[in-house]
Length: 196
Image (cartoon, rainbow, N blue to C red; front, top):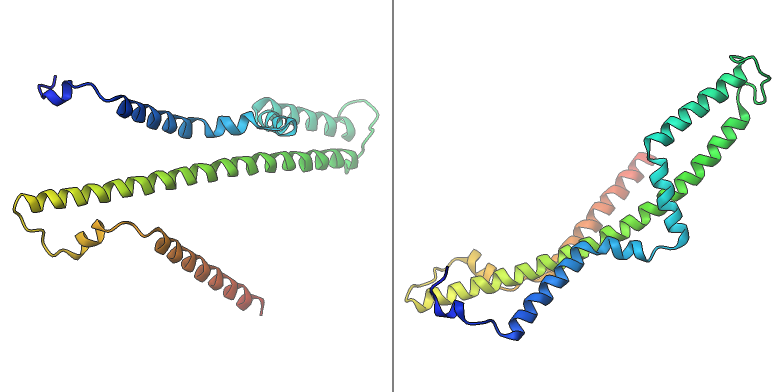
């Protein structure tokens, strides 16, 4: 229990509202990105998700094992019935190929949507990281100011002076783009070297 009189003072309505707003924004950002995407799915996307859930289940695997075993057994003469798709099982091959094509398309649709959600999460993460960096820089500036006011001399530390400066996001972006271009050029040159 705090005995500081300032702690017993009620927070202003603006401060309380700001805290609620930050909490609400954080909860929405963290918990609702996927839910918002799921709410705005088209019928085809919902179908693709349902199909992906079914296709990735154990019963789907068991059903296919039984289906293939029965088909091959039926058409190989294992059972005393007339074969309708004799070896090399052309009809089975065509059916399985068509199934694989459609399943691949639905999986790619789901992956594309998951990729879009991941990009939103990365953007949110970047924004939060930049905000935290700004707050840390401001805290360092305040501590350095308090240190000076107490009569101490802040040492001539170049690293500390760099930390006290605001983050140059544009410079970081330029460095990253230069690194990406250099890696792409190196990969392109390796590909050209292997071709000749």
